[in-house]
Length: 208
Picture 1 (cartoon, rainbow, N blue to C red):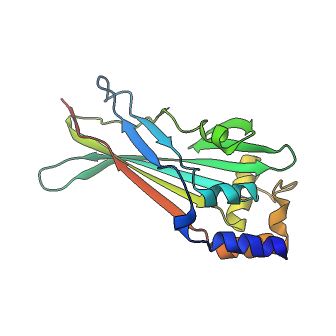
Picture 2: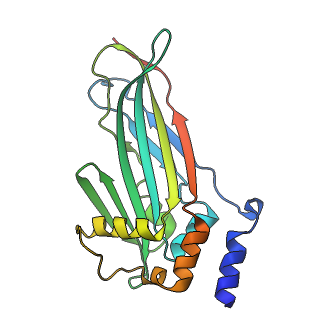
């Protein structure tokens, strides 16, 4: 009961009491070769929120969804020339006492392994990360980056763990078994899948 009251007090505490580093996003366009290389995405402090860190320690996976858009700037309206999405999952393995990090873009899966601290886990995906999205013809362009950070609900956890284990069937040996308890289910409903969204727009660049 004391644990439940402490967690509820944390979840409903004023956000002004939380001290967190500023989230930073950047999209670096190569000065030469913008047509063939694509930009580098750099992020920082996406896991710096005290609430996100506490939920990770309590066994809730953090899902980070990235969406990079390429826009062609026109005289009257701007056209979407392309888009790429990818995901990063960070979850705590209480048995090994490690924070695991994986990244997925299309059919490419990267498992960065386990790390002792959240900070060291975050450094695995904060960049620079080269994204293969670039103009195919001349024009004036810019990139728009959207990043969503979310503590996943119980059903989302099942889906992500199935993907992590490469299985389309029921998940077995779930390391986050605490979510199967009444407390875990209750907290996932209290959270309501709260999401933090961040955006960043690159500078304009011209492809001759």
